[in-house]
Image (cartoon, rainbow, N blue to C red; front, side, top):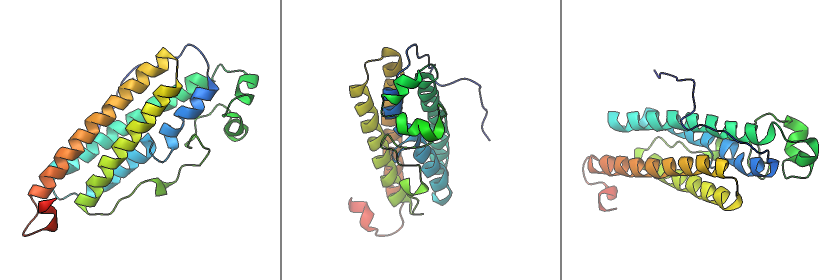
Amino acid sequence: MWQYQKKLQIPVNIKKPNPKLANFIISQYGGPDGELSASMRYLSQRFSMKDDISKALLTDIGTEELAHLEIVGALVHQLTKNASTAEIENSPLALYYIDHGKGVWPTSAAGQAYTSMSFAVKGDPIADLVEDLAAEQKARVTYDNILRMSDDPDVNRVIAYLREREIVHFQRFGEALDRVQKNLPGKSPYHNC
């Protein structure tokens, strides 16, 4: 079981409302490459891993992704909580606002509602770990895109931290894939990959 500390991994202290930026960031909450998909992917895939080290890795990273979900939710909330109706109306968040107000709800920046079809669980350690490597890179690219669109240093500090964690997760999944491939029995076609 996990021990929960009632604080974010990195503090979120947004000073200026920005519903337009909140709309970009919401993709990392409930978009196809966001933190909700990542946490569900890893916490589901762990059950079919063949070794305890890989199971533990998926549990740890899946749990950390839940913490990232909380950070992204805090960003979206703080970027919208003091925004005026006019600011929201003149932003890409206007359509979202009609259904969800200033609440935080899992969706992509394009307005696609979260679905579990955003992530894969195949039950094959190699397929799942390759999926995980790609997922971490897609999340990193999304964070890169947010950083290109944002001029808010308070937001950028948090996004840069989350981006760095995606890189670390990618490295850990690469190590797990190497370990799994080395431990495959017999003459597997994966040994020559």
